[in-house]
Amino acid sequence: MSAPGRALSASLATCHTCALLMRLPPRTHALGCPRCGHPVHARKQNSLRRTWALVAAGAILYVPANLLPIMSVTHLGSGRTDTIMSGVMHLLHTGMWPLALIVFVASVFVPLAKLLALVLLLVSVQRGWTWRPVQRTRLYRLTEMVGRWSMVDIYVVTILAALVNAGALARVEPRPGAVFFGLVVVLTMLAAESFDPRLIWDRLGARRG
Amino acid sequence: MIAHPVRRVACPDCDLLLTLPPVPAGGSARCPRCDARLSRAPHRSIERTSALALAGLLLFVVANAFPFLTLDIQGRQTEATLFEGVRTLWTQDMPFLSVLVLATIIVAPLLHLSLLLYLLLPLGWGRRPPGGPRLFALLHHIRPWSMAEVFMLGVLVSMTKLADLADIFPGIALWAFSLLILVIAATLSTLDEEVVWARLAPRFEPTKARG
Ligand SMILES: [Zn+2]
Image (tube, rainbow over all chains, first blue to last red; front, side):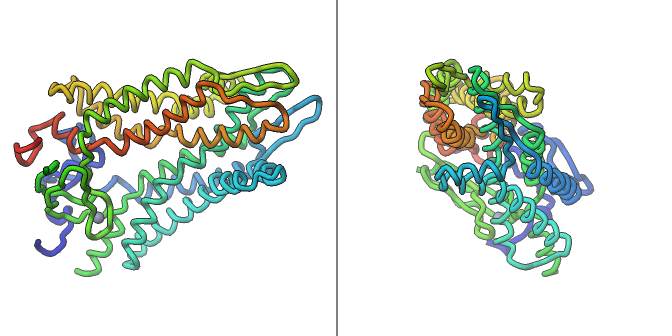
């Protein structure tokens, strides 16, 4: 096998959707994949700018998502409102600490860690770091994989609202915090999707000459 | 037996251009530089995946037609189906959440399973379904939004939250939904995307010698 080379340097591009390898004519930046019809670019378009915008939006919404109540429960005249964190504490106090831990990790830790990981990846690419490319690529794949688990609290609100409101004794109402939370999950998923991990390796090649 | 012949690929994660050695049936190949999975060749992928998709669709119907939890609050029983959860959010002026839950729990899993069946059943008989490449590409983009397994964790959390308010009984739909999660995970591990692409669009194959 010859020395490792980039597909880009050989004027080849991979379709993001169907993985077909094709020739990218000189001075072309985009073409339609002949196999699946989706647009093909040598690198995801405006990857850094789009990812920054989505990460920033996600980080801003992360604040109200955690500070505002996500639901309120009224039962026999007495009521309580829950934020994400107070829901976790409630689980903890009822002795369900493994579940409390899972919800804490999924709802509080994962979105924050995901945002921080994407910022690290963005900065590392923009500064042209050559440091640990394999680990950074792994970090990216992990970021892409775990985001979905943050949806768990949205589902809890849905299930409680559907079940409890079907009877007449109690009421469960979703609160705006849940909407912000849903937006954070969607935005961070889109952010991970718009980051192009090949940029990590492009900078490496440029450094080597 | 060789499932995928020698071919030139670029790693989707690090853009390394390499000539991939033949992948035997049941084997897989990873990128030597960044460890991304480049190829996988599960045994009898098309037959197994279409059988799983069919089973998944049946479970999907059961999971949606019956109540998934029954609640007993001081002798009064209430129950809810998945779709009622979506409808309740809508009537509570939460259209975004309602659509998000509908998309991730009902629409995406249903599309995932029915597209697999629509594409793989004819391919198993040596026929190419109309619109195949477009629909298989669509399937690729739908996959991250199908979150049945996360919903299941939500059910567990809900059950403990309700435990001090009422007695809770899992419904038939909940059992069907649990099986559905396993079946969806199984379709992901048996699906060999390269073989599907090769059969949907054979003119893009490097060699004609394919099982
Ligand atoms: Zn690689």
